[in-house]
Length: 140
Image (cartoon, rainbow, N blue to C red; front, side):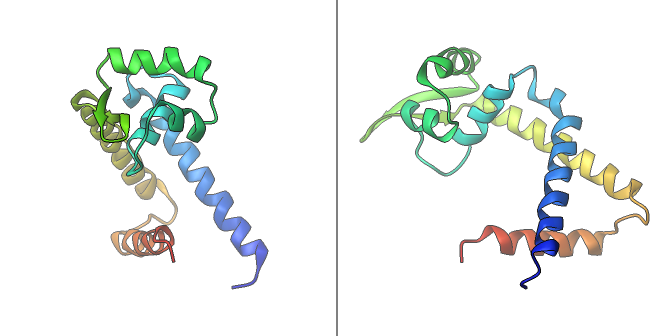
């Protein structure tokens, strides 16, 4: 594939879908700010995340990070624990429940959006989209 226009359309359409889904499911984040949502998303990855790397990955100064992170720790959405390399952040049980609520809201949104599309997007289309996205997500 060498057609930049096709790839641009793909990127724009993917971005639009994710933007619409994020906007429609914002309430599932239980009042978290945009920065707090970003912090939770980074900690939820498979990366080892400490305060310094969290600031780096979110492109946020430590001064701006501290209040948002403090609120997440206080609400027990995130937790901090010691390991062999120092202190690391992890998703706490309340954070796991929150992420599950967000996933449920996103599933409901995508199901409704697929049904409302004209023509409707059927299960076979969804399976093909999953296969495509999974292939893109594996480093190659």
